[in-house]
Image (spheres, rainbow, N blue to C red):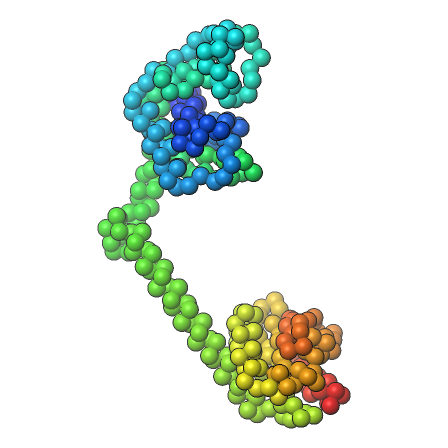
Length: 322
């Protein structure tokens, strides 16, 4: 029932604390704890995060103590004698003001001053499963764990999840992680290839627009719309085209549901005459905002923005400059 589950988690907290101390070092001290029926929390002082190897070691040590079925002894001891015999590490849950202390000892493993109820032997705790360990603030690590039947439930959940994944992948369970990594690498490679393709399409569309550009004041001006919403990719495409067309001024309108990205670029020769950062502000007056450098400026407009209108404004501004 609920009482025995709480007792298991309480004793498990003592075992886990001592295991963490032995694996991570003597500086480990209980910062706080919360016991529940299904899972509990133990916060300890530790100067960095806990690695997976350390976590495994702590868990193995804790479960070894459970399997050894050590007696859990409870007795009342005068404070001065308890402090002389065990030191101040007995006060893991904070200093107890009483003259006589209730000492709980996991035989040969851990001694603490504690008023809580415990199981009589460590074997009664059942398996201890650490669910996760994370830094909750500077110098404090939180362990979330289950003991007894809730721990078995968590282990079964993990087991059947892994079984399901391995069946979907069509490999034995012990090869599921390796197979998943391979699949992930393949997926990343496909995404890289797809992105490369999108970049090529964008750049060639822009080159096509420049091939039909109109000449304004000795500069070639063009505007193009792309079915692409990734600002980083749009920037790469625009930069590539800008670098190979020194006399070009190029306005590019991307796609987007809430806002559409817009870019204005000037080739090295054109940027001697045109400053994109101020020009984009004038083109977008009343439509949106933008900014950047002499050679490249970026901004955004509403989805209803009209490319024809933006091109008209670009030409108008270039005629004024020219």
